[in-house]
Length: 89
Image 1: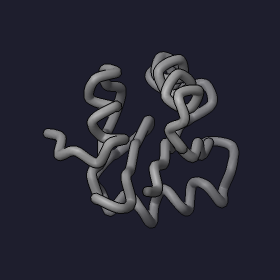
Image 2 (image 1 turned 180 degrees about the horizontal axis):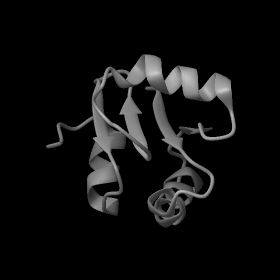
Image 3 (image 1 turned 180 degrees about the vertical axis):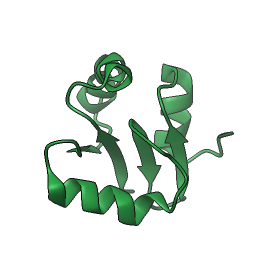
Image 4 (image 1 turned 120 degrees about the vertical axis):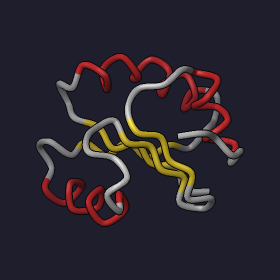
């Protein structure tokens, strides 16, 4: 399963999500963290994956299920997303 978090280094919503993301990663959930404000290659990856679904960051994408989250969210929703469960956007 390919889980990706696109974020901006100083984005307040992204900074707020970091402890939750780091907690999931420490529990063994493989989430690829891609900083897009200072990394042009990652910004290009986000633009290609985004498909006009999310105008900003953070943007979370499960490439296996195409489930995505635009903006900050709670831990429960993020866990469902990571598990491949259907979530409401």
